[in-house]
Length: 202
Image 1: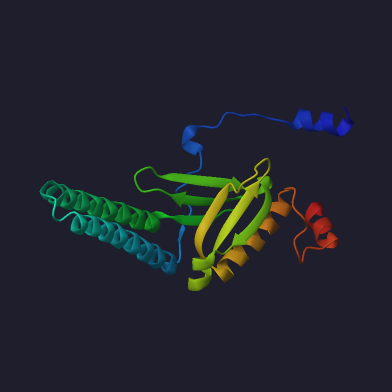
Image 2 (image 1 turned 45 degrees about the vertical axis):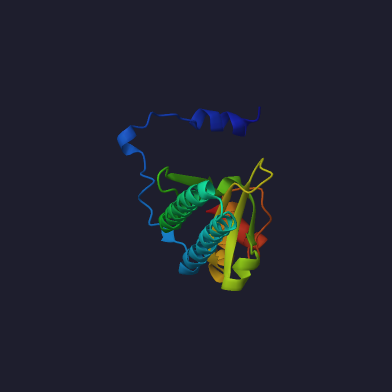
């Protein structure tokens, strides 16, 4: 054990923190997802609902000569349509509750309508950040941000419904913060060794 490690252990403290002094995770101001993401999701659910209703209608017409089926199938079609509309409305409403926020040492993502959750990813745990654009994203000009942390094979946090510019800006900012917090990421573009030395000297 080196003298530096001994000094660090001597300086180590672990004082109790009162629950009233804990920071409130609801304090940050969350940014909403882009309106285009909302309208895209709404359009997709409208298509799904119409497809379910159309399929049920075709089944009913195909069995119109069957008296029993002519009674049962309309009921099934109605239940399926009502269910699809209800699920669509809940998913669309849930999108309005999604949001993200960046703090000094982590990024937050809020989601959920009935079961709400807020996920916090510390920058010190970030290993990789990427932007992803599927066919529909490219069509409406949106992008998704994926954040990978240490020990994970898949992304630990996904933030959809971002503009291309916002996704790129968030990616670069997260990498910069992660590098400053000592995460195992490559030195971001624009950060020189001299800048690193100046930061370490502060």
